[in-house]
Image (cartoon, rainbow, N blue to C red; front, side, top):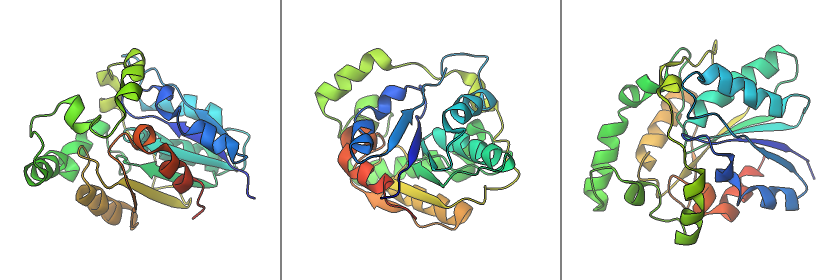
Length: 230
């Protein structure tokens, strides 16, 4: 078995807790896994700070797999570049329902650049859920209510700082990259994720059951997908 060191980067809110249902599954299979906790509510912390914290969790591991959920898609390529510059590139990047950045792009610009709002509204009209965003309809619709309730104490508002900070990469890192997409993601609909992955990475997403918070709703499926080497 190929042992891997998973560095799990959460999305907006920065709670490492998001990965709590996936970590034991990876560890039971003989891997190590570090859920990164980020200072999401700190107005002085942007992508450089997020990358530094994530880099510390990955440094020293030749078997590192960098996993970015949603907003975490902006952090992992910066970390991969830093590891590569130090001569120890990660084994792989895995993007999960992620924002896939271009060099120099900010998370704040990403939404309009990829047409997220239009894609979300079109999917809502076709799918029959509310066009107005709310947590229940867009994030928690497929999450067990007990799991969702347990997560309330971990919720943090994402500070504005990160949305104005730049994804400081020269190009997408020369690292094997996989994209995992939840078939039932209402926030970043499947068609949007497929288009962005093809346009920006030339990659075809691996589609799994689950919505935007797939690590909470489908941990077994996601853990199995993460353990598949590209």
